[in-house]
Each structure stands twice: as C-alpha cells, then as structure tokens.
Length: 257
Ligand code: MF3
Ligand code: CO
Ligand code: CO
Image (cartoon, rainbow, N blue to C red; front, side):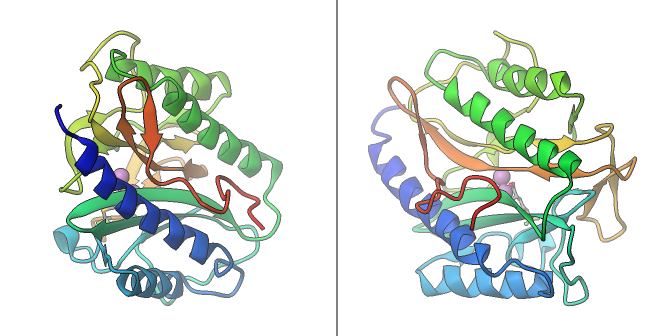
C-alpha cells in the first residue's frame, strides 16, 4: 500500500480522540451512575473535540457508545435504568470519527474491588490482545494473530468468542479483513505495511457460545459466565506496528486510578 502516511496521520487523530474519551470517562465510571450517563458524557466529549460518535445511528443503534456489563459480551446498549453497582465489570467501547477516519477502542472498568476470577479474566483478556499486537509486522499472517490469542486464553481455561471479530477500519467503521481472535499459525492473509485494523478479543470465563437478546444488539454468554474485552485500532508499518488508540494517561487496564 503506497503512501499510507497521510492515512496514518488521520487514524492517529481519530484514535487519539477515542482513547481520550475513555480516559475522560475513567473517573466518571463509578457506583451509582447510569450507563446512559456514560453515553451522554462520551457523546458530548467527542462532539466538543471535533469528532462524531460512530455508533450513533449505525445500523439503527440509538446510542453513542456500547456498555457491556458482566455476562454481556459486546454491543450492550446504554440505559437510564442500568445503574452501576459494586462488583460490576463494564466494557466501554468508543468509536470516534474525525476527518472521515475512525478510531475504535474499548477497555474494562471495575466498580469496587473485582473478584479474583474477574480480575484474572480481565488480565488474561488484556494480555491476549497485547501478545497479538506485539507480533504484528509485515509478512505475518492473520492466523498468527488468532493463534496468539487463542493459545494463551485456552491455556488459562477461558474461551474465545467466535461470533464477533476485529475488523479492518479506516474511512469506514467495519471493512475487510475480518480479524479472528482464534486460528492457526501461518494461515490466512499476509499483513502488509499500511493495513489498519482492530484487535478486540472477547473472552468468556465459561464456554464461548453466544446468545442474542431480543433488542437485536446485546450479545451475552449463553452459560451466563462473565465476559471481558479490550480493543485497540492499529496500523502495520514497514517493520512493525503503531497503536492509534493508546491512552496518553497510561490507562491500559484496571485499576486505573
Ligand atoms: N465498536 C464496536 C466494534 O468494536 C462496534 C459497535 S457497533 C454498535 O466494532 F452499533 F453497536 F455501536
Ligand atoms: Co471494533
Ligand atoms: Co469497538
């Protein structure tokens, strides 16, 4: 891919705004606040900083970000009724559009002190994403990414969700290729400089099976086990990678404050 420098410049700006939004939300995600309030804060922050929230009106989604609690795997819809309680774990997934380019990132947040099991799940999920990121460079294959995540996660006794995956991202929210979080080494498309995509493993404490709720969006674990997720937007460089959605405050995984 020639001359991807300008694309990377714009991905950097969009990614930075998405990460800053999560940084800003960090101190506001606490016991007693509704997930709709988190959504409102995220919407306003992105708007006030020159961006637009990609989820809003995306395929009929009516909120600006996703809040996925406990056994919700992904695409949880913020609501006035759902108030954060002690012991909750929530993934907040933010996607900002700036100058037609997308930055997509999510982190886990714990309300109060997490259980040992939840803490292990969150740490393993974050580590699986980082292990996959660290191998990125031209010449490796998509299957290497999936294999890195799957082998690490299954060793821990957790499972990798199959029904949702990472995705190419640039001037559209979701574009080819699909980035599977499971797979076989040395299989699939070869990575090339200039490619931009997300890695966003969804990891369940129990089985990987998914159930969809009747709202058409909320995906939960079929066995009601806990689920965790982190997401970064990345680009492939000449000899490695660049993370566009890194926290400037060092908020990579909980505890943050
Ligand atoms: N941000 C999600 C992703 O990582 C997509 C959310 S789509 C929505 O791809 F409509 F549910 F917001
Ligand atoms: Co994504
Ligand atoms: Co996302």
